[in-house]
Each structure stands twice: as C-alpha cells, then as structure tokens.
Length: 561
Image (tube, rainbow, N blue to C red; front, side):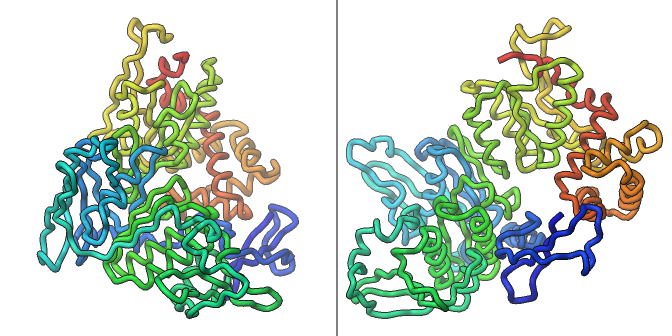
C-alpha cells in the first residue's frame, strides 16, 4: 500500500511511503521512505483551483463586472455553421470537437471583431477558390466600459463581396497557434541563431511571476532560463544557463512543450489586463499533468489580470479544472454547451463501432450504468457487447446530446441517457419514446424505448446505494462478506467494514464524498475501488432495482445492429 505526504512548504515534491499491509496503520515506525516524486505526480486527481474561485469567476461574468469581455457570438453564417450561438459564461472557455468540426472557426470568430487581429489570420480568401465566404456574418455581444459604462454593445463582422466589414473594437489579443510547438530547428526565421560563434545581442532573465508559473506547470526549476534576442528585429529564443554539473543549452535542444509553455506564460505575464488570449490545441507537446496545470494557471490569470481565455483541445486533462459551463462542443454544424469526455465525443460523432451508446451525468453514473447493465444483460440473456457507456458533464448535456444524436439522419445507432433519480421530477426531463425498427424483439406489437432512464431514488445515487447497502447488512445473507471481498479485503475484515460504513453514514454530510471517506477509513482504499464495490454489491443484492433502471429500454437493449 502506498501513501504520499506533501513535502515542506517551498519543496516541489511529494514523499512516498510504503506499508507492508493494506490493513496496517500508517504510524511513524511502519513507514519506509522510498523516493521523492515530482510535484506533478499526485495521489488525488483533484484540481488545485478552489470551488469558491470558480463560483466567483462565473458570478463576475454574470454580473458583467469586466472592463472588456466577449459575452457571446452568433455565427449567422460562417463555414459549416448557420445561426449557431456560443456564450462565454466563464472567463476560460474550452472548445472541443473532432478534427474539422469547427473549433478553430469559433476561435477565429472570437478574434475577428478585434481591431488588432487581421481577418486573414483565421479566414483567408484564396481568389475564386473561396466563393463560399460570400455573405458570412458574425454578430457579437461585447462588454467595453470605455464605450458604454453598463450594458453590453452589439457589433458585427461580415464578408459581403470582396472583403471583411467589421465594427471592430480595441482590445489586446494574444494568439498562440499550433506552430508554437514546432522545434526551433524547423523554424526558418530562427536560422540567424544558429552557428558556433553566435552570441545574443541581449540576454534577459525571466521575471519572478513567469518563473513561478513555469515551474508549477512543468514541475522543474525555471530559474536558469534566459530570453536571448538577435541583433535586429523582434526574434528571440530561450536558453538555459549551466547549473551544477549540467551544461547550458539553447531552445534548439528544448522539448517542444517546454518552449511552448515558457513562451505562452512570458507573453501572458507581460500583457495588459483584460486581454483576450486564444490558444489552439492547448495540449500540443505537453504531458497530461502539464496540460492540466496550464489550464489551472490560465484560470488564475483570469482572476488576477481579468483576462479572457479561449482554447481548443482534444484532451480530457485540459477540461478537468473547468466547470461545466466553460466547455462547448462542436460537431456536425452544431454547438452544445457542457463538459464531456473526449471518448464520449467519439461516440457522438459516430467514430466508434457500437450498436447503442449510454450517456451518463458523471463518472459515478458511468460506473452505475456499466455495472448494472452487465447484471441486467446477464439476468435476461442479452448480449452486452456493442453497448458503450460514456460520461458527460451533467444531466442537461446528457439529455441534449442524446436527443441531438438520435435526431440526426446520419446516426448509425441509438443513444439513451441514464440520469440521477432526482432529475425525474424536474421540468424538461420527461422521457421521450424512441421509434425502434419492427424487427426489434418485444412482447408488444410496437417495440419502443425511453430515451431517458433514471437511477432509483429521489436523491443522489450515492445516497440511494448507501441506504440500500445499510438495509441489507442484517437482512441479506452474505451481503457484508461480498462487500468486503469487493473491497479487496479478507473476509475477517467484515465487522471492520460494517463499523466504518455505519459510522460514516452517520457523520457524513455530503453523500457525494462518502465513498472517498470510507476508503480513507479502510486504510486508504481508492475512491474508485470503493464506489465500484458498493455499486456491484448493491446491483446483485437488489436485482429489482436494476430491472427498474433498464426495463424501460429493454426492447432497445435486445435490438441487434
């Protein structure tokens, strides 16, 4: 069993300890120091951004408390989009979608209304080969306290005949394209920095804010970095001074991600407040941990410098620190607000071989769907293969993406959503019937299926499952033993499991956290392990609950490809 403790303040590392037994207490004499881990290697997967900061930033947007801010844009006609609107409800916005879905189009639309951005940077016209640009039009709602002290102002950018017409506004805009991750050796403009006798015209050390940010993102010392400028022009490269026994080296020997992070951070820290920052494919060249840290840094910048950030990504790690309203998904000429797993996006766009896709609100719902679906199919003799389960970011996105997918004439399979039980009573969540083909297996003349299914209970699924397990401790034979085994504990630990679960049920104030707390009490078992153990034990102890979930979609589950 491994545990990690944070090092002393100022030390960017964790100290790892190992114990001999999963049931052993973590006392001083029981611990053996194994190694020091980099700051990026964490035991928990929680963001370092406080929920209070997320709430405050979203509230500030809602109150329009910015000097300059792009509040919304409507693509009346722009490439593959027609009358589609994107709102920026959080100062850091992620654009997600498959290649060719329009992420960069939205990014370019956001840039287009600003005077310092040339339209051809995102929407270049190549003579007669780009006739499709005719009548392109984007409408904007913008906060600009210099022009109007309170309400938003409206602006338009349109391409009528041969050029763009813009009611452009003044704002600092930083743009970081995918070319930023090109190795320095492949950038022709940097050839003047190559040569055995080259010496920079000037050397400038990174500022403290840049050093601190780069270190937190990359997890390495950044105090030795320099910016080296050429004799003429604005070109520069980065270099690292010799340290200890290590030799110095220039950007020609940097990793592409390393140079990209230093460049992004340096420009942001030197920018004016209220700037608009646009980044294409934020994860390019970066480790997943560094990607997450970079987004967390951008959220902090949004708070500290009142900046607005919009980036495109294919990375789940980039989405992790963001709230649900900060993510927009683009595909098939449509835009939908809400966080979703990138694997879910493959399902939505038909890039998977499946006969049915189940969307859930979150990771816990995804686990409930997977475990109960297996139990249901096993009980009723249904082939489980070809049914995929994916989490989205909330009930509304799960419902909306499901219905949008099913309404598409290009779909190759159906989708349904499994939602928490408390959504059953909310407005807008009444199930709709799917029209299944006649060859679907059914005892009825007209086979059908609900598009929305619900986990039993009127509260959170965690609360419902916990209550059912507690009920079964004394009424269902061997339930406690099965739970202990599912937790990967020996059978003699049954009473310890009962004690911990019963105590936590009394002291816990938020059922969403109860399985993590139970894991801590049982010698630091992982939250995922505890969640799956409880779900599995519940689903096989209460088969009627499982039927209650899946019976409304029984015909669809039996439907062959």
